[in-house]
Image (cartoon, rainbow, N blue to C red; front, top):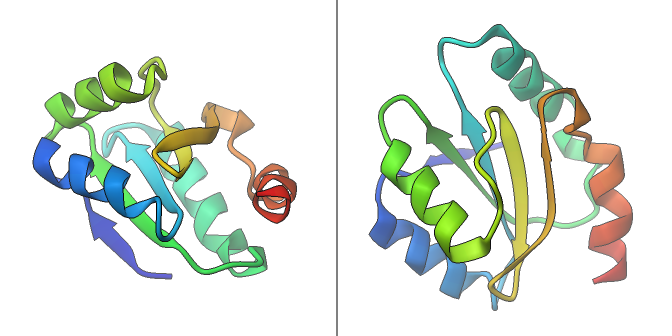
Length: 113
């Protein structure tokens, strides 16, 4: 798995546009939170079970909180930490936070889209 850093609102806007061609996932992570670290580890352990390839972005919330605010404003998804969002065709079709983050719940959504 290859994490890409999401470090600007401009990059967020570009990846929302790119999601019309290829789905995008964003993991919002607080580097000071043990729950966030556990969620990230779960994602990394189960990533290979996903049936398609898509871009995965990592958002360091402590450094780039304005980007998280832009996600909330543009997608209408309330800020949480940790949080996983799956975006397709400019819309968030899956989001979960804390212990609710589950790759296995994401799989049926990907297959249906």
